[in-house]
Length: 136
Image 1 (cartoon, helix red, strand yellow):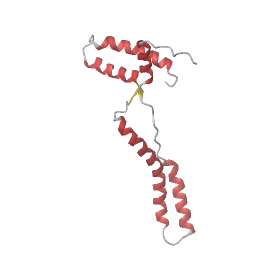
Image 2 (spheres, helix red, strand yellow):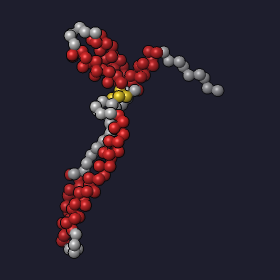
Image 3 (cartoon, helix red, strand yellow):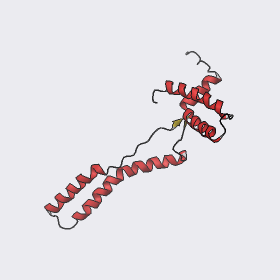
Image 4 (cartoon, helix red, strand yellow):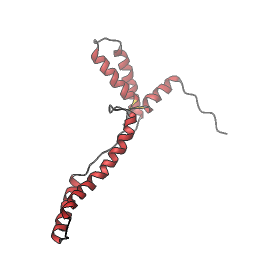
């Protein structure tokens, strides 16, 4: 029988939430990202295929060795330059998200507004989160 897990204090839970929870910082709905990721992966594969198909369309008709060589050269020449590169990236941590929102609020209000002390506290937490997170 394994020992019972150690209980975490509310402060520890909040720090872990700031470090582990993620928010979509790209500016689009997170549900639409599910469709867009699949769409971009498909597009990444389709672009080189479409370019090759367009180049091969010139070789229709009677097979001529000179025409085949020209088409092959055109396909090989265009493929690396027109490779469509798309990559996913991680959503930002909750600490980064909250920090950005508070910075926007502080800029919009007077210098000693209510959000200035909150911003300093979140900056302190964000520094702790960055120190603990090996990916950042």
